Length: 561
Image 1 (cartoon, rainbow, N blue to C red):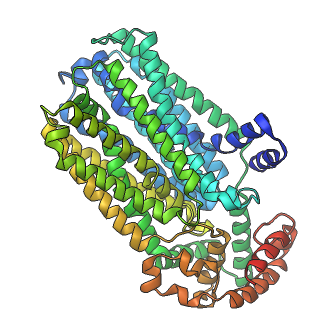
Image 2: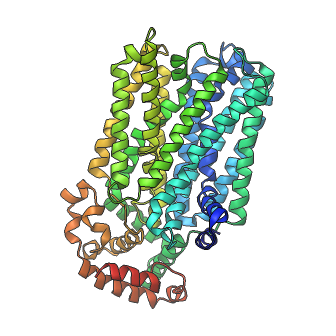
Image 3: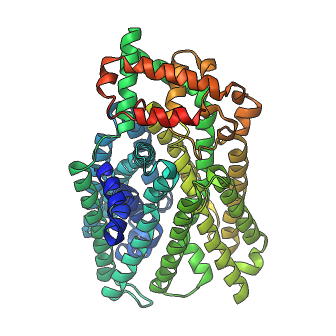
């Protein structure tokens, strides 16, 4: 289906061509749309929950305040983490197609449960039901992270039209997260207007209708995603090709698939362990600031607009979501530019967040504390919105992208899932930290100090340990992996070890760039193609396999001249 879309895009012009281009990344990104639509609404729906079930979410007569304060903040994230680890690992064994279908079905069922949650008659019963539904939905969302990223990267790598714009295409898929965020904010705003929740006091009936309709819209989006994946989604060509090559090599070497998988995991960790570290730590640093600020957005709006109605605050939520969405699109625009690329985009985004947060903290008495001037509050608002923009035009986009690029195909989804899981650990740390701080204006200022420290840590880790995959074919990591599994790492001389595609750590400590040699790699590549082409299964696939096809052979061989 994706290949047909890309061919149609190249043939059709005008409106139809634009629609083909849009659906080529919008449909694969429906999972990220749904994730943001449901999860990022947590801070926005609290006023409605407090209105419908005040004895549980406000006065705490029927519910334990500690459970409301802590459990509701991170139990869903625990479900997400479990999904990231499980579905990421399984995707490297069973493939991308069925994993994507299963997680989509889980997300749909979780969204349906959430749609009916406001009908609960007991406050405590609603709390338990809501937590179960959120966690189950999160379990599906967790699998969406590694599957969507790996699939988008591999789909682009297999397409002649998209190969040079792989980063752009992957981030456009991810940008559906920003679209889901702004859509949710807009839907809640519209529902509030429809059901008369625009005044100073919300009503239980109107609040219930807002929740039901907003979750119902999210369920419809999940239905579209499920239908697309069960009817049109095809398996990743790159995964199929690499899997067949590995099975053929295992057969030639008389090694069992289980033994090969165990050896692959141990050897991969040795060679790619530092990359797993930077992907994970950078994601932790980003998610602390991203989730911490997103989940506490209403607190910041209360400081900016004290006494304003929930309807007015929701309008500002829409504006903030729109500014964030622009960040995704700017990231997609520049990520494949050789003069900018992944690494610069990530550490510049981290540094920008550090600057904005540290300025807010340093000037908190003039910007956010009680008695601050109007100009100070406006400055706070501008800096807060800029931090949202640079978070998307930086680490939030790049952490999702590079974790699906810096590893070979046979471990890509699993390693991406682990890095994303560690990122959500940062979200839990943020949620727990913020839940324990003083909710007064003075205490809230500490959030920005801690977020600034995480930002500078993210920049340092990125500069030292993150390799730049801008302009590098993903096939090179698969070639490198075959040499590693054969115990011949020193015999690989390809582009994956080019200095411009390595981290500072890999250059100055591991010294991998010393092996890079274009002429030796050209000869080795020709021998590899001939060796693989004589295998029965590989020979049968010669007409369609981009790894050893004539087109790719000529393209890569010419680049080695």
